[in-house]
Amino acid sequence: MVNHIHPTAIIGDGVTLGDDVTIGPGAVVLGPAVVQDGCWIGPGCVIGTPPEITDATHNRAWEGDLAHHGVHLGEGVTVRELTTIQQGSRRPTSIGAGSWVLSRVYIAHDCEIGPHATLSAGVSLGGHTRIGDGVNVGMNAVVHQWRVVGPGAMVGMGSVVSRDVPPFAKAFGSPARLHGVNAVGMSRAGYSETSAQALETAYERSCAPVAVPDELRSAFDWWADSRPERPMVAAVSACS
Image 1 (cartoon, rainbow, N blue to C red):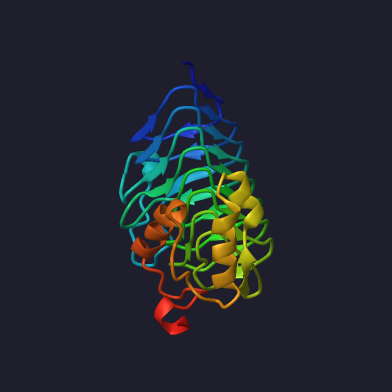
Image 2: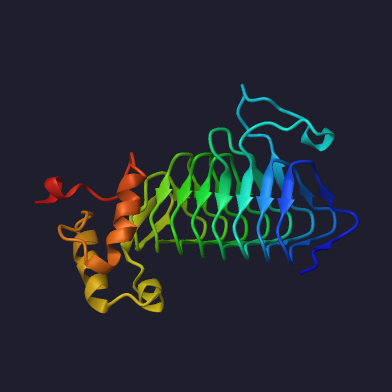
């Protein structure tokens, strides 16, 4: 398929584009970067600038001076106007397939965003943030660096996330607090009411579930592998 690149867009060295990619007026994509099939990048976006780390090299990628670990946009990612995404310092800054990144979003270095996530307008993610599959982050929310937001979670608009949000949770406020289960999101994703209730019972006590339902196992395995350092929920041992 043909790509649709506006003549005022800047595509730097080391950028690999898939098929049917759209890049709007004035957008800048700097390498190293991979933009997979069907991605849509809006006007004025800036993708692939150096990490905002004081001792990191501030290279001139637009002159072919490539450094750092790149940006990876999965298949069918939408990045709306005026969004900025930094290069990774230790790993590629990555956005999973089918995710929506709305206008004026800031994604710092080394962030990992799972597939089918939604970052609403004005969201800011600090460096090394991990966002799980299907997460929804509300408008103008801010996520502190190194934080983890588990799969299926919902973060309310304007929230300040300074602790790690467990899978399928609702969190909002400044600072964000745990407010039960994202039951609507779980239902839309096809999870059972029984599983939602099991999480609700645990989250009412700000605890991790004693027994994770089988259909949620992969989400909680991802959460454990992410090693959340400041979780909103206590370990099972502390709740029993």
